Image (cartoon, rainbow, N blue to C red):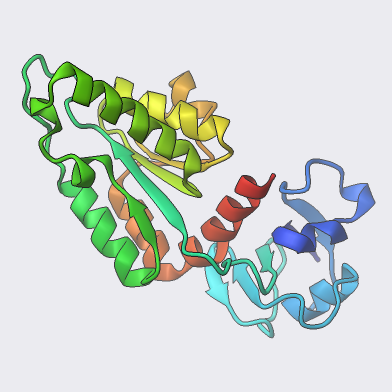
Length: 234
């Protein structure tokens, strides 16, 4: 039977030469009926103990789970989670297209922060709004310094989450800076055809609930974090 495999971290060195494509791209492989992730790893020439995490069709699974034809398998090495706290930059609409000095609701930042801290206790959050809650009242010098400083921090993060239910020039600049710094980008937006999103974001989700579900079902921890760390090291 045939399954799709995606390798993370040092496991990518075991990508079959005939698979083609980039190291981080998924590839198809034929395996025997009744095989598990352990058998798959052995078939790829991966040594025992180097695979400590597996996701099947986006869901965290056990290494001895029997695979089915057409399954999408992600294999993770022991260091996939990293030893340092994950640095997450929370980007998103503030003033959007407003013509006044008021802000759009920033409740999404609170939701994201709470969910990330609940599922990743050691996460390090970088939130421009939390660090500068009164930024709309800054004078030009303070505002310029804040804008340039926070935009630069986007490139220093391991992962940037951009909440864009409406266009935001500031967020687009943070995404571009993050892209330049090999920061993994998740965009939460309906604007899937906008080039600034299509060509910088690694993942595009339709709504905030979709990301929260990833945190609940373990996909964020098992797949997104290793991908973000690998992207940063590339």
